Image 1 (cartoon, rainbow, N blue to C red):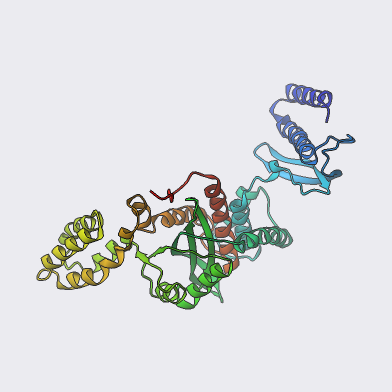
Image 2 (image 1 turned 90 degrees about the horizontal axis):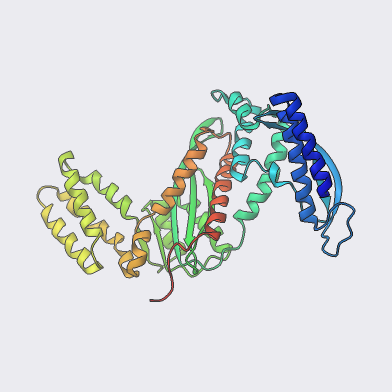
Length: 387
């Protein structure tokens, strides 16, 4: 579009709104959006319509109609197409991957007639219209291809590996079950974080954790200096089988939570918590072990089960002392992954109940894919340069 064409179109928009008032906002918005999409197509093609240019990368290929639900009302658009180059107007990417996945999950419930409270109202609020099964199929097929490419991308060297799981409610075999979402993040040699992958399984049994970790290895993950996780039996067995000899840091936060199960009286909990913090905040492993023995001796009579548990389990949280002090705070727990879980929960609670495993894996993959892209272009998480 030429500058004169832009000026004429904008003048017409102003006149339309001036004459018709707010009733014309939808039409005005449609015109502005079409102008923006045409300009974007020209930038992608490297040339304006009918322009001869050495920088041209493709050609305009007409338009396709599209109805869009907006706050100003439903508008009809002519969406520009291109050939010879991949193009889709960014203005129409209202949903980033996670929003598209959430819509697909809720739409799938709606189409399948699942009795979810106010699902029709939610669907209208998110999409602005009812959906058909064919629309859901098209949306999910496109999204699944994109997310599968992300889930199977090569990994490479990972310095620190952090593992954890959370649960979502999913329909399976005619009943509602808690489905385990296995997630792995890593600190890469350049100090940035990466979401390595995620998997939807029916439990945290060894067979599921082993399959997930094997998939990461098959994608090229190597060079792990230490892994961090909770002490779930299935994860422990899989980790020991696939990463023998690799140092393991048991999450100190989970250790502190586990310890409370062995405290005989509620009135002792605060004191035990303070002692655990004192142990974990020691300057080095030797000092942590000294403080641990003091606590074990102190509880021999008043809480013998707690004393025995602390002596047997707390040293598994001391592996981090072998790392440089500047790395310890961020690697002594799985808190960096717990933060992701909070974001996932914030998004998945809109759906509440997923129609199948594919739907929940789609949404969580979309969320994590977006997080991974932010991390890859963000600041360094850990300085891994030698001191």
